[in-house]
Image: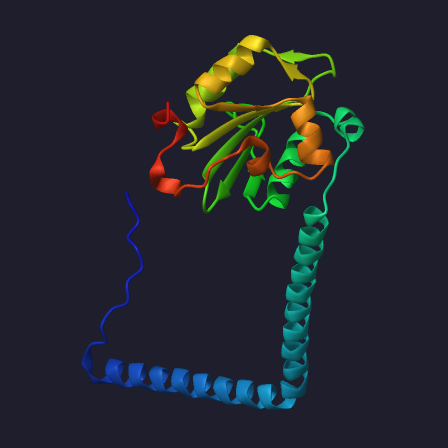
Length: 227
């Protein structure tokens, strides 16, 4: 048999109503006493409460100032960022992607690293108010390594349709095959080989100047519509 839930019954008769009134008055009296006791305790403890509040405010302001200073220091460091090819050659894939992200930030882009499993040919994505969105595919290889046309096909197929990019770039510390360079130039997939990477990372030439990237509103069209 299912058990019935507990339910309060409405007082019946004058005696039950009087008892209920007494209980209600007692509860109100206890709540009143509790409120008074709490108030007196707060009055006695207010110096400590004020000190705690002041400490919390000071700590919050200190953290905000520390984070702002760290951002300024990082921005200043990125503005002077220079990387030699020897440093780049010594990097692993992840460090290379982070380096390209930082170089974009140095050049005025808002950039983030997205490389990893399932990145769909986008290791770094950047945004610029005048040039729109850029997708960078990083290919860290041996100095004598070459990037073939298959990489260019893949980047072209995902930069616009998947990432909504206006500009697609493949960057390597090696070189590109002749077919890869020619195909990229025909289909608006930019490429940065070892020589161009030296000018970008080591000499400080901005990517937009290096590749002659035009300035246009971000809504003008993505790579998929620029063919």
